[in-house]
Image 1 (cartoon, rainbow, N blue to C red):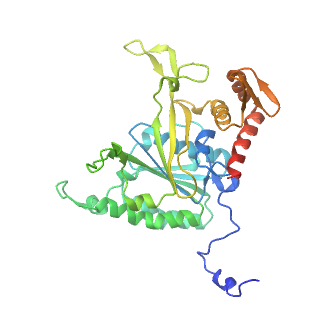
Image 2: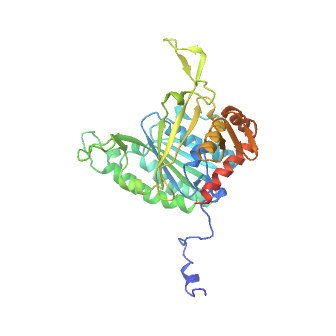
Image 3: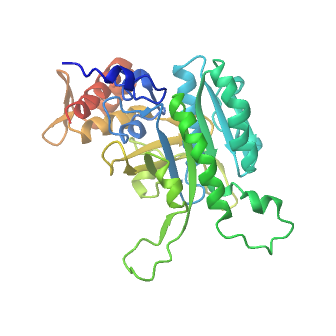
Amino acid sequence: MSNKWLKQLQQYEDTVDYNYDSFAPENCLYTPSPYFNWIFANKSNGVPKNASVLMFSEPKAGKSLSCYAFIDEMQRRDPEGIALYYNTENRGQLQHDLFKTIDKTRLAMYDTNDPSAIFDRIEHDIKPMVQDGMPLRIIVLDSINNIIGVKRKDSESVENHLMGDKALTIQTGLEKLIPFCKQNKIMLLATAQLRANLDPSNPRAPKEKMAAQFATKHAFEYFVSVKRAGAAEDKVDLEGNAYTNEEAQDARGEALQTGHKIYVKMEGSSIGPAGRAGMFTVDYKHGIINQYEEVFLLGKRTGVIHMEGNRTYLFGGERWSSKMDCANAIKDNPALSQAIIDEVKKLDNKQ
């Protein structure tokens, strides 16, 4: 029996559309890394377009690289999609070539930490463009910590201590930006730095924590920590090859670094389980590489690729006598790689 009042109640613009599936594959955004995508723990292994992600790490760990990865994959899947990138650390002019495959005609990048150039510009200039049909898919704030407070911006001296100015500025800006992004299915991607955790009351507390106030944390559904992987096994690929150029050396005779692995972990989630971790490889010239290794490890560790004894790997009626045979089969056969990823996704469908 239908509720006679429901039709009237659903006339408002802010009514939730129960027919829209935020987690459907076509309504999600992704990175080029299967393992990174997997940590979002939903049936599509992706980030809903109407969700917000806050990544945090120590300096030089890979936050900006991860932002570019989202844009790169979005453009690959969406031939019209546009991204906005606010580099509040004023490094856009230096970093814009990190991913060679990014189409710069569909990426607008700004070197500014001025809150009015960020939040007011989106409200007054970008919003009408979106309403007019501009296919904006991603907005990046890299990082929120460098957005200057409105009072500090106009202060004549650094000696003027303006307590709470930065926090209030960011909170006020996000109060308008978040609803705009969600209503228009635009993913908001932001980064935050780490700071010392000065909590003498808890000696077991971690030494560092995300440098973000509670209002900022409440604005994001996903918290993702990013670390540069440093274990010995993380410095080589699955075959044991180091990410170095052996033909070129530095002053100490060490081979030049050509890439490294990045470790990502879902530290908190408002719309799914937390705690999942993934790892991917970044090449300094070619972006994210060796996805076949990720698919192999993801399949093996989720049980999708079965093991018989200590050496035999099984999937879909096929068998391989070593991990490299299995990994190389994935590398050489995109259909096999996709089949394994599809089976991994089904595990989240069952939850």
